[in-house]
Amino acid sequence: MKVFSIDTSTSRVVACYFDDDMKCSIELETKAKHGIQISQVIKKMPEVNFRDLDCVGIGIGPGSLTGLRVGIAFASGLGVGKKFVQINSLKLIASNLEFYEGYIVVVRKAREGYLYGGVYHGDSSGRLVEIERPFIDDVESIREKISCYEPKVCIGDGAEFFEQRLESTDYNFPSARKLFKLTVEEIEKANFVELVEPLYLQKSIAELNFEKKQRESK
Image 1 (cartoon, rainbow, N blue to C red):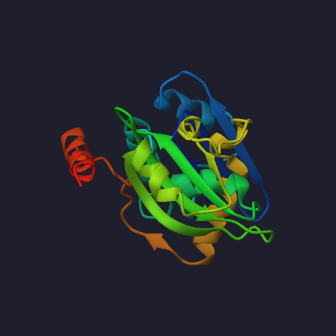
Image 2: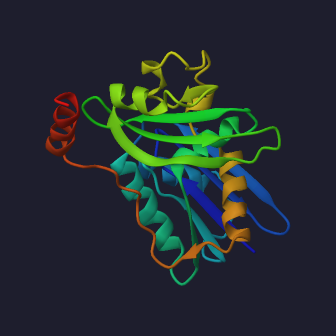
């Protein structure tokens, strides 16, 4: 099976290709727009025939809305008439610490003080379990939400707001190697979809602020 997978949910675009004879991956982190980064990915994979794919994996977020739209449009174009698998972009980041024997809290900056979040649990076998489905909330509400999870570590570009963050920021972004692993897992589970849709969690700021005031008034 010839498979190409890509995630454009962060400023680091990661992609991988694999078939029965070859495996290659690439990570790009520049200030260029996602469309330009995708063009660079294609150029750096000259051995890949993008017209001859059997399956396309796509990171669906949550994350940069512009990045997700560009990446999904590109991957959907490649996969016309092909199989698709969807990759949760927060789980992709969490998989950087899949061998951590505790709770992995992924927090990514959204808009105006709000964060995307997700909670996962790893173990020594590298098996990652989703504990909290992706959500969006303010920092204080997330602190309260994750207070029951111990031991825990926070990663992602929103980890700066939490004491349990790691000193190294290397784990805050997706990895092409982990994208390969999650894509294979989705294929093995036959989790194929016909239509790829981004994982949008964006309520309006007015809605989020109203919910916050409701909680604070109780």
